Length: 529
Image 1 (cartoon, rainbow, N blue to C red):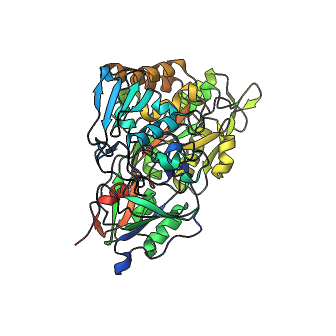
Image 2 (image 1 turned 120 degrees about the vertical axis):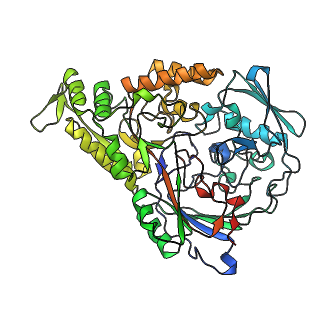
């Protein structure tokens, strides 16, 4: 398993980073009094920033900050910094929040409506370098009404708007004095959450300690450390040695702990999928027939069985098969004969080596995947094998994100995406042509007017039937004109020392390990008796 790298240009649909740690903290799982309230987790990546203004924690589960609302274990919205759920008026165009009384930032300053207004206005400011502004496209105005009320006026009714207000709130008296793109707040955050950052050794670990001013009461887990260990095997080894109390692991490594009575495995269902981006700027991937043939040639069931050891499902599009908005009759099996027929009809003829060509252009392209990510490597190799059977030569190559990012425009990438909460979350940034090439938004530079219309209809309507029809049209259009080859939806697996009560998992987005995981509610954990 791997997590999305949270960057200044963080997006709902983003790629997972693999950052190899220099070392991890020691002492995980110790029974002495000093460490009884401390835990150490091994994760695959670290954030680039801890500022919500640039994307950190925008989907919830930040331990440093709180949003107006939060989600419970079933992803239902509940009050956080707001005293109650919002009052919705004017046909869904006005949302009014009343703030919880007595909340303080970790530096002792009170939370006010001005902090909320500053946060949203700064996020939406064109000068702020984030790529998730489109997620708040509906916001026309945000204003304070006294010290304890915030009023959002929307340009159009946006059905899932309340879920967007899990965005963490930052203190204007600190962040407002800095450049949001370069200021020290990005690495020295101050929030209202249950924990404060006590140390960040880049590429190695982040350590958090309990916030004594937390409005929800001081947590029983007094400190926790996220050890940044990009290599799956190293995380498993450190967990086995007792150096870690828990870790996110791929299925094959999680299975090695099944007979360890001192540890428990937690499985989280997810909307996280693996897909191959097929850039329209690529000489080969830009050909619709190539993209359709690859969609037909891939063996999704085999990937779930052999790569994920059953811990996942085939991906027939961006929405998982158990999502209420999934269009059931788009499910399809491997059809190698169909793939060959598509290529034949489009003029891609087999050469002596079995690889097809058209007008002197070989059906060959590179496929990049982040080094150290075994699950993506296995997906990439299986994809290349399936493609070759259809006469398409896919050269698999591992690289760091620093190498991958400049090449994403015209080179295929084994990518990871997926959001929870509403179909609009993730689909818009994944597919809308207005966001083509905007950081990790629409990496394939996909441009389909029918899909754009469906995305706009789904975003702007409050009628459930209209929205369902829009996303149905979108999924069918993606089958006819794929910009990505969707491979699998992945279940996330975590192995933890069995020392605490209160652990659970939520349905998780692509971003997991750091924000999501059994530690999503670590402030509520209780030591086992």
